[in-house]
Image (tube, rainbow, N blue to C red; front, side, top):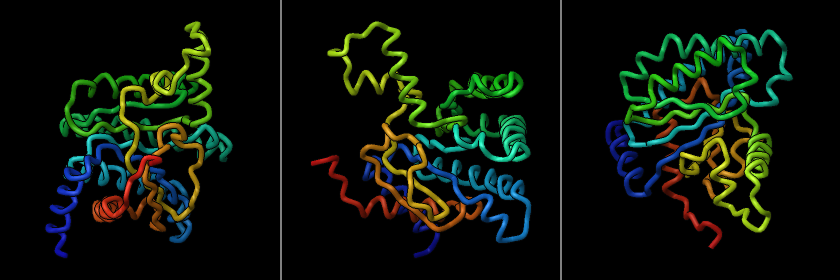
Length: 242
């Protein structure tokens, strides 16, 4: 199938299936770099390029929401040099790319405990959100200092603080108190790098998501890769527990 025909088909699949939200575990940056005898930093930088390509592909295909796992609550356990680099990479990326993303209509938001980040980084995040909040393009939701269990604990504390009676707690109420309360649950979860685990990511939200695992490392992921994942999604029969 010619590339243009394939991409046209992908757009039709998105319309036909009502695919709205894709979540991604962007795994394999360090392994990609190691295979090429490069420092881990180069893998993370190349991963930013893959994110930009995927974001534009979502726009081309008609995907409204893209959620990416950028930094987990467990990632603080990595070497300080790498943690510091990832913080700086986010700051630099948002600073350098914000104008272009804004021009392309991207809406940026963050999920996770961002209050634990530096004041400088928090200001950069807030500026990105404020600048793009009225855009109408793809909604890019970045999970940073995020862990699903931490999110659920946060939701429970919020509900308790409101004085809600136990008998009044419902699934909808819990969903309304999650970081993702304004966004539909993912239809498709993509994990790159070949590992077959969830890694404490969107545990509540992916209850009925289709899961697609590819051996490609994240720096190798591109528009064609996304089209393959969407094609596989089309071949699944979603039952939602029925």
